[in-house]
Amino acid sequence: MDYRDFSKKELTDMLDLIQVSLSCRTEPEILKLTTRIKDLVSADHGVCGLGEVASGKLSKIIKIVNLDYPAGWLSMYAEEELFKTDPIIRYNYEYFKTHLWSEAMEQYREEPYTDFMNKASEFGLRYGVASGINGERCSTGSIFSFSGSSNRFKKYHKKVLDIVTPHVHQALVRVCSFNTGIAGKQAYALSCREKEVIKWMKEGKTNWEISVILNISERTVKFHVQNIEKKLNAVNKAHAIAIAMDRGLVV
Image 1 (cartoon, rainbow, N blue to C red):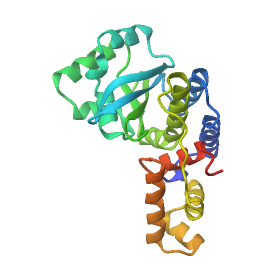
Image 2 (cartoon, helix red, strand yellow):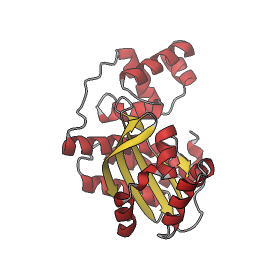
Image 3 (cartoon, helix red, strand yellow):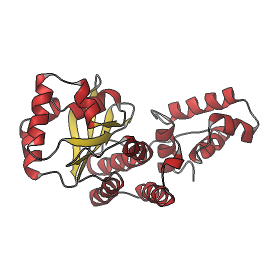
């Protein structure tokens, strides 16, 4: 990630958002966090949710937190189980990669998905950007989706979500665990060396830079990073850092 893409204020806002996410415990607090993300990506509407994942698909909705999507749309969405033909949902839960809505629509051109987007367009939901994390041993995954009335979303907005999503995902899982008991805090045992490595990962250092700082080979750093991700059940470095911060393993 090249942080030069962001202004000092934007970086400060994102870092503050990440810090606030560590103490998030309630649904209203999740709403505030996602509203801040909505502002960062210049969106008109936002929604986030957590669901069970099976065979690369969303199999069951656990929780939906709506910022300001139209109530009529959400009612129709629930009654008709539209998540089954939602191309944004399918792309997210198949790849768990930050994407523009247009990327999902380009991939799924079959009639059920085009019909879905036609329905969404009637509520002013045509353009957007979305992200999510496949966590908790890949059995539950999140989605954070933001839409706007015009086609204003670019690679920049994807980069914003790449930074903040892992941390807000942890906050959403935490809130859901309090309300439903789907997950509890696990004990993670990182070695002293692994704690040193993840400390520098949090500071944005590359594997090579960490190898120089710790006076070990880059290959050894990569080995430690892989072990950290495995121990924390993380899908990537950003997710590992978010979990470590959430669990108090790194400050």
